[in-house]
Image (cartoon, rainbow over all chains, first blue to last red; front, side):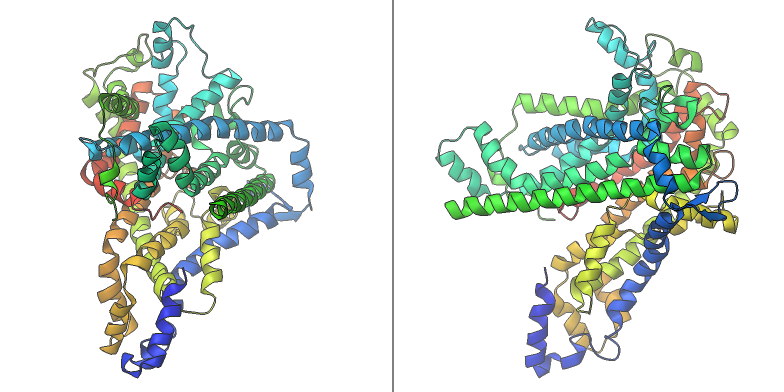
Amino acid sequence: MNAPPAAAAPVSAGDPAAGGPAARGSGPDGRWTPYACLAPFFVLFLAFGLFPLLYTGWAALHRVELTSPTRMEWVGLRNFSRLAVDEFFWNALRNTVTIGLLSTVPQLLAALGIAHLLHHRLRGSTFFRVVVLTPYATSVAAATLVFVLLFGRDHGMVNWLLGLAGIDPVDWQNGRWSSQVAVSTIVVWRWTGYNALIYLAALQSVPPELYESAELDGASRWRQFVHVTVPSLRPTILFTCVVATIGATQLFGEPLLFNGGAGATGGADHQFQTLGLYLYEQGWVNFHLGRAAAVAWTMFLLLALLALAAGLAVRLSRARSAAREGGR
Amino acid sequence: MKLKQTAGRQHHAGPVTYVLLGLAALVSLFPLYWNLVAASHTGERVVEAPAPLLPGPRLFENLTFAWNQVDMGEALVNTTIVAGLVAVSTVVFSTLAGFAFAKLPFRGRNVLLALVVATMTIPPQLSVIPLYQIITDLGWVDQLQSVVLPSLVAAFGVFFMRQYLLEALPIELIEAARVDGAHSLRIIWHVVFPVARPAMAVLGMLIFVQAWNDFFWPFIALTPDGNPTLQVALAGLGSGNHTINQAIVLTGALISTVPLLLVFALLGKHIVGGITSGAVKS
């Protein structure tokens, strides 16, 4: 990763013909170039990324009402302790986890399968790749509004299909599990193709020699998949897991619009209210911006914990493959 | 981008592969097709069992109604402005910063790069409350700049351009230009940007799609009846702000989706190439 500067420096230092300081970018003009290149990004990032992140933590320690959002009254950790005793907070946390699992696991498994199919030598491979990516180009709002109708209890296409198979109509809006499955379906639909293409890129960079030697050893296609493909894809699988998990923790538009005109409750019994939706309800329906900030920071801490866990998982898997390499 | 090296090892697809891929294509496209179907019927017909499977005669009337009564036209213009500004600025600033991270040695580089990578994971929920305080203070609710300004840069873009320039831009090219006496601005304009152009195009398309479909913050900063983007206007339709029928709601969805689908039909190949180029994966 650090190869270019390390390699460039000694060359130009030992070779006056290369232009000395100017070539190293440390002349009167070059010295400030890196900082000038970075400045626009970092100024905007500090103003609209880092500052709001920290200030949200500050706001979480205050009583802030939507009616006068700039008046802040210090309350210490009260916003957090209020969350801890609010059953709807815990409900939203549980729903975020279950909807997260219901959307992430099928999404990544299906993506792996589609990537495997796309990895064949195909007629119309570009067509298939573009087509599986089209849901990614569809917005959350548009997709959800379509799926609300497809999942309609009395008139929806999904229940009609189930009816053909002899299954009774499901109330996709009001059941706890059925509504969570329906919301997750929207996420799965939008993101599977995108992940499939990322897996495809990883599949294409697996060295062919690995398959050749596996074939020489008489390994079946399935054994090749399990023993060559999956281990080679491990870093990519981890990456997509992280991205999908981050996406799942901030789910908002799907559960909001799946509720039709009924607002940010996530269903009559809050059966599909996620943390993102709960945050919005606290801040913009109940007018408690301070408490919404506390929800935001709780989400942040949860993500940090997950990131830590993912980091550990990477270390473990690296250590394990290193041990295997050593054993050979 | 480096595809097809392993083409020799790929198995030829059998009929089962085609059937399964056909199924995946069907599932991917059907909701979009049905969106068109629903937008071409009356509101009553859309919610009647069994749901219509073929397009009806009402598409033009529904489009006219959505355009005139719900003002999807204004929302379309707003969205184009927002997504265009965000894409251009993100691409330019990401290329500059990505170039610095990839090719220029400077103090604190690794720490700053780690900071950029770490911030890719911060959800938007963590910034909406201070941003909302700021825009209400400035009287910017329902003004497009409240949506544009916070999105002018993206950590993902910086990382994406750095990964590309690391391999695509030979250090000798920069050194040669310096020997010729070119100053930094000239080098960036005449050496870095031309080399970076393919990646800039892909990043621009990805960011444009993302900005076009952005929902959470625009939904807070803009109102459906004020000065909305398409997604905010759609949310207004879907949550019953207007007493209109489901066919009109889905006509709105259609209007918001079709422009991007056209972009995909024309440039999808390049977007696919960008995602599979490996810059996106770890």
